[in-house]
Every structure is written in structure tokens, then in C-alpha cells.
Picture 1 (tube, rainbow, N blue to C red):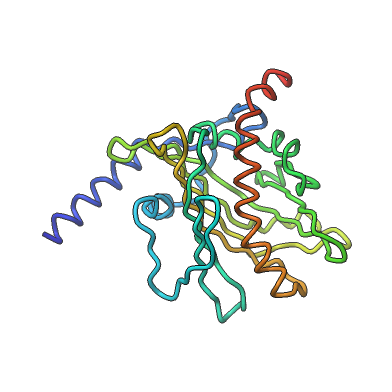
Picture 2: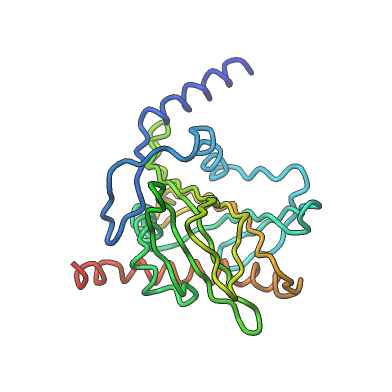
Length: 249
């Protein structure tokens, strides 16, 4: 029985790999460039979407909070003293293909994300990466990220699944700004699938080390309120996306 399960899983993985489409970050309104060099492995994409069905919470994961159809779990790292998070939930009234397009559109995000002070994709000596400066409340310093990401639209045994992976990138040409703290350890995976009712089933796994001295209470507050607030903003952004594209084409 176990051998057959492994064979079936390997076959599904092979099928998914064969049918995956990889996209560059669109500049605006769902436009995409040529297929980019693959930055992540097939196994990483496989791992990202398998938890849409069943959360994998062994190894120290603990329930953190639940709000607005979203459950958040966290895993403490003794090495960093920080938490990694897993988010499970749904986004009603927003289809997964639309959600994926909105999530990938950097130009549009600058319109609806009030925390994005600067956000753009740039070619750094032949390597494309995204620069993102995030506003932090005073007296804390802003943080910025330099990262790469890849989107794949997968056909997993007849299931349509959208996956976006992101991670920090070391780009020496992107100098650090005075007064802004560079986040050098960042990773995120996002998997999306239709919930069967016109909305999207979502799984997110993320970690970043913001550096500096941030009070524990502020980290906990941000984790509990930030994700639900972000999903609320995403839902609103999805509803306004068609008008944005019409007015900016």
C-alpha cells in the first residue's frame, strides 16, 4: 500500500512539473514577460501547495490566533529567537486567478498598499530582483527587502493551483540606505485554489528577520493583526483591479 502511495505521489509530482507554467513578475494588469530562469525547485512548489489540503504542524508548531476565517500557527526558532508562521484561510468573492494577478502586480500594489514606500523590479547586472521598502511606525526604522520570486500555475491531477514563492536575494549592486534596515533573511510561499464558491482557499508560509530591536509585544501584535488586515486589503484590491487596469492601459 505504501509503495503504491509513493508511486502515485511521484506520478502526480511529475505530472504537475510537466504542466506548470512559470511567470515573471508582471509590470501591470496581469502582463507578464518571458519565462524567467527557474529560481525554485519543483519540490519547493510541490511542498507549497500540499498543505492546502492538510496542515503539517508536527515538530513544534503551535496555534497562535484565529480571525476572519484565518488560522495562524507559529514555530519558534531557538537560533533566531523569532517565529515562522503558517496561515490557513479563505478569501471570499475573489477568484484565485485574479488574486494571483493582483498579488504579482507591483505597480498596482503601490496604489493600494499604504505600507509600501518603494516597490519595483530592477535588473541588477543581469539579475532581476525586487526592491521593497516597508514603512514602520515611528520611532522604528523602515525595513527594506531585495528578493526574487516566481509564480507557477499548476495542474495537479486536474486541480488548478496557483503558487508564488519568494526569498531574499544578495544583490551587491543594491546598496543599503542610511536609516533603513535591510532584511536579509526572508522567505514566503503562497498557494491558492478555488474554494468552490467563487472565493479562494489560501495557504501561506513565511518568515523574516526584521533585525534591530523590536519589542516582542509589537511583533505579536503585527502577526495577529497584520495578516487579516492584509487579506482585507487584498480583497478590496481585487474588487478594484478591473477599474485600475481600464484606467491605466
